[in-house]
Image (tube, rainbow, N blue to C red; front, top):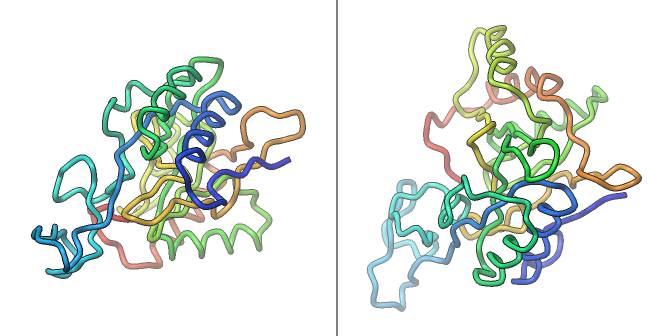
Length: 244
């Protein structure tokens, strides 16, 4: 059986329903994030916000509710409350998205849930590299879990891992591109159907819930890491700037 979030046109109720599903059915701690709106159009009096990589005078540069003109992930990061407030309490989650129905859906990766277990961690990389990696995994028979896609990046959700485990695995590589990011304890990922940089987050691979319910199946990080490092190394490395 599959649970599919974010496949329909995003409405205020779909964000609320997606948050409730994550928190109550899957026991994934979530928190409302920032919102994103289009930048001022040419017919408005305001001076348009210009970000790195956007052409001056562009009417499409998204504006984040955090009011940071240099926000590189508009509408796709925690805002108020902070990430540490992430919870699986259905009453709190419902209250948050009832009061802020347009807030993005932020997963606190690697965080302890209010019930048993911990939230997924994630590995993210440029979308081009992500597509290549998924194709390789498919041909080689490697099972992949949920994959979140934004316009320029993919995030693969994996079972929780410890920093020591990650360090040991990375030590085996001569070089790891900085475009490959690790979202563990203290990190976050925006989940569908959030709007990031004016474009909806979507499921490149939907969460799959095994028969009997519970949380979606997640692969171990070590089964994917080598393939993601190789795929990331094959595309230009944007450096430390993470943008959608």
